[in-house]
Image (cartoon, rainbow, N blue to C red; front, side):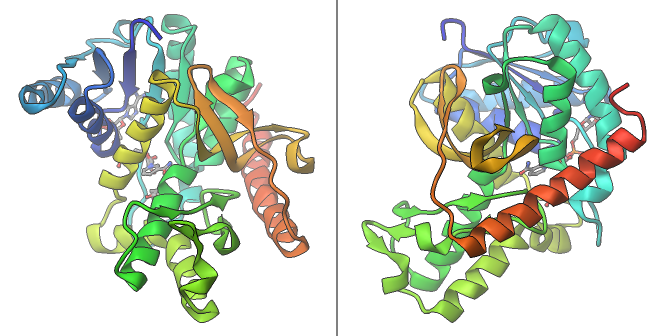
Length: 314
Ligand SMILES: NC(=O)C1=CN([C@@H]2O[C@H](COP(=O)(O)OP(=O)(O)OC[C@H]3O[C@@H](n4cnc5c(N)ncnc54)[C@H](O)[C@@H]3O)[C@@H](O)[C@H]2O)C=CC1
Ligand SMILES: O=C([O-])CC(=O)C(=O)O
């Protein structure tokens, strides 16, 4: 990627943190922030730009006055939308965020027609599906961010139990970014040691549950959803695309026969590189995990059905 320009639409908590994290790594030459709320993108762009004085490489950070200024981006991150509060689930955000997504995606198609889109807004898998349907773009160019965050949360829980292995804990979470997400303990290694050698079944069960409810735990304490780990997870994916690093990250992608499903988005391990999703990796699932994956996919499908019933795609 030559220009390395990243657009971030929605300069709220998550969007701004992703911009800050990217600028601290100095991977892209330019970040442009847009937010519908007056002054938000401008104020945050100035603040982040001033912090980048202490970054290893400089990044130009600007605020777009209008959606038209988020143009010719290599990557567009969509963090526009409402976060959940209180006892809400991510699915409760469906109709309000789908409406926001519609106007945002129309602008991305107009002004950054060659971009790779990273979707972040919730409910994540359904919003990613909306972008596929609206754009009709090659499916490798639309990626939902979820597994990168859920995997980091799982690693955090494992580290908290072990007290060692930081940075060495390989995790995998597949399925939806919601109640039915599937952390896969059988795939976890600490260094090269299978986690089953280090933690009991009961301890892993607790870790799985805390990973699944990791987002809600933060909402409970903060009153809104988390943004540091999500922002860093977004930056991690953007860096993989810009550096063409071909790392494996679980992400929500359009399944077209993989895992036996079609015309639905769900989290599975993929290779990320300059073209976005370079490859979908099909891992062997045992019967129990297949059944869980089916429940997860059906929960995403039910969100898509609600949109169809409301004539969203017409
Ligand atoms: N996929 C994931 O793992 C995660 C997803 N999220 C989701 O990301 C979204 C953003 O979360 P936060 O940043 O915490 O919310 P926030 O409320 O802090 O920021 C959202 C921003 O979007 C802006 N916005 C709304 N409509 C817009 C439009 N049409 N064009 C441009 N900007 C628009 C708002 O003005 C606001 O500044 C939420 O839907 C949240 O649930 C949050 C964390 C993790
Ligand atoms: O929990 C939320 O609503 C936001 C989110 O997706 C996460 O932090 O995983």
